[in-house]
Length: 461
Ligand SMILES: Cc1cc2nc3c(=O)[nH]c(=O)nc-3n(C[C@H](O)[C@H](O)[C@H](O)COP(=O)(O)OP(=O)(O)OC[C@H]3O[C@@H](n4cnc5c(N)ncnc54)[C@H](O)[C@@H]3O)c2cc1C
Image (cartoon, rainbow, N blue to C red; front, side, top):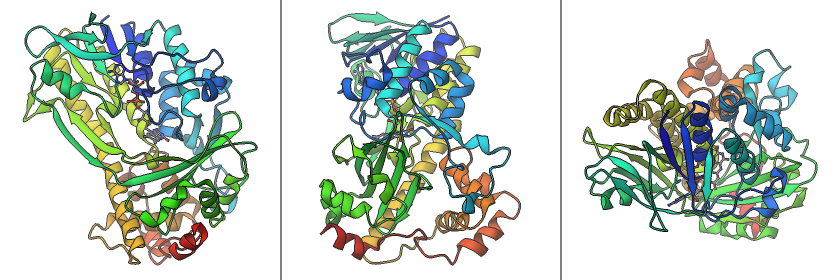
């Protein structure tokens, strides 16, 4: 049993804490935001302030991959989520029957349970405490303690207190100060890559009766993507995502124009019919970021690892962050089952290897998708058709178009959005490539009904 200090009580920090506490580790979570969740998770949307997380009240959807991990690794959390009003749904069941055919054995892999972000945390936090985790809120970490070398032995807090641990797990999110703390402690700078992802999100939450409209979660149109996300307790959200350089669409920040735009997309329009429970929130400047504690083959430090957004985060338009964080947390839990944390170097090296092998390809694939979509939106804004030398992009678009006409391909495409299969796995299915080429290659650039760019610009004035 190790003494483990987790920085940050976000989705990664709480998920990691739960997994490690169930393995009998002595886990303490340190969170700089002072307030804990209200006793009734359903009140968290109205009552809980969390300034440490910019996206706290922005739309979140938990994909089937996340739900599968919760259900299998932390079943008690799954039950608490549904008790708190989280929404159970099936991504194939959400499609119109003429697209998906009858539900089939195996479709339960598309099941998920989702909720607004404050409600998710308000369920995870007491679950972690019930599992024996100590959560200390209102304590900001300001640095690391070391044994005089690059072995981290604990953290320093804003009050000047040192807290020691056998392992420090940084779940401090996309803006974690881990790199500067390490350098202040005398270590080399970790490897770090970062870039502004280039999207801007205009989102609004609603309450009422969830629209009966049957759709995918993500809809691509000329110059804009629309995302419709069911939430807990009779709520849902709608996001319009555009390229942040597309100045002509900045009027979407005004509610009247936002609604005028949504009205031009028949599959999305019914989702704007509820009672708004937020304004139109705008979020831009979200960085894609990846950090590694191994540089040129050498460890920067031991005794500390990064999990979740602190290790890698991407643009959220395909909603994978929480799933990637849970996959990462499970890797750490499994590694600690076979590696003594006192063997600092072995643990740090093996966690880096496992993260690079398992999670980095997921991060790269997400960047790949975003970069193509962004370039496509830039071409839309310029009145051009996006051309790329990468044949996988037109094939992925053709898969979507073909999925509108073939129930098998609807499942293939939905496996990608559910984050339960890779494109290679989907395209390796018998006859899939031929069917996608036949049904999808000649399809219109944007096969779903909706406004052209000119119509969109006219709608928003
Ligand atoms: C706009 C937006 C929408 C998103 N939508 C989705 C979605 O639909 N689905 C999905 O799966 N993911 C989504 N994500 C990503 C998702 O929020 C994260 O990937 C996931 O929550 C994991 O984050 P985390 O716990 O690593 O970091 P965070 O959630 O950022 O938590 C970090 C925590 O660390 C604390 N902290 C930071 N520094 C210190 C310090 N010095 N001392 C003490 N505490 C500290 C912070 O207060 C915070 O509580 C979205 C992200 C954004 C930006």
